[in-house]
Length: 409
View 1 (cartoon, helix red, strand yellow):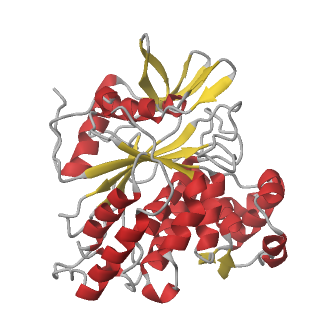
View 2 (cartoon, helix red, strand yellow; view 1 turned 90 degrees about the vertical axis):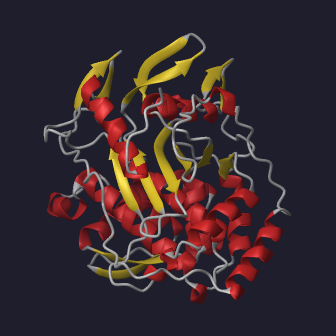
């Protein structure tokens, strides 16, 4: 079972679900929030643990990971407003999707370009949960929250929580994004993984691409989105070999093989470019469904021994595109525990899925009424929840991850 860090990197692909291809419009009426929680139907049979052979392979890989020349970002945990009342058996990691097309996050290659945390997802790992050890909670990028500043808190979109601009240079500051999540949602998130477009494509290419069952509209839009939106990446990421190997997809329904860039576009499709394909694309809800489906396919491929994927090669390939305060050995330890929960027993099941999900804002509050609305704040269109709905979202988030609400005070 030599797929530890690849699982975390593949989970980062979920960051794709809210990175827009076309400009987001706050007055867009077709935005539909997916169901609050998607549960996986599992039987009550005992889940198998890892074999001695698997554990030996994990130990070997764990020792190898420390050889990587990688210096984690140093987060000041004392300023994160951590909720001390939350159970310690669940480890929460914030996955951050940056609207950056820099080729190397480690070198901060685009210092003059402001980066937004367009996607924020809490990855919750609970090795003691044999049913759902992996949970994902996503936050809509335009959600109005309180963001900490040196002068208190300001009301703004959650996407604006990452970094700051000073002396004409943008400074990455993931500490503030972590603090924003904890302050608003009474959480205890201390770890993060940030990734950009190049990282997503590199991960999938390193896995040899992925086979996806497409409808006709999806196949058409993957081709169209690459032609319309991928110019810079085509010129900087592509090699002669990648360009020669990539072929336009057949505009028809069926299983087709996608390389990294095609899979990125598959997960980013949101707006239909042809009326005849409106139902195939299905707006933002369709985009999140496609991303979830892609994530499951990639996770299953990463966990499958017969795939021939080299974890160490994958990790080495993708380090330049990832910023995190986790060191490799910590990730190895976390994912080993998750694998021992028995999650791999679902591989091969029909319509198998390895994750459960929650989303903020909720579609409806506890009374069955719409939980959010579009409002204008400081000239920006934002996703607004009144105080009652916001508090309910905090409570239901805790219930999803922990089973009940744990107030911070």
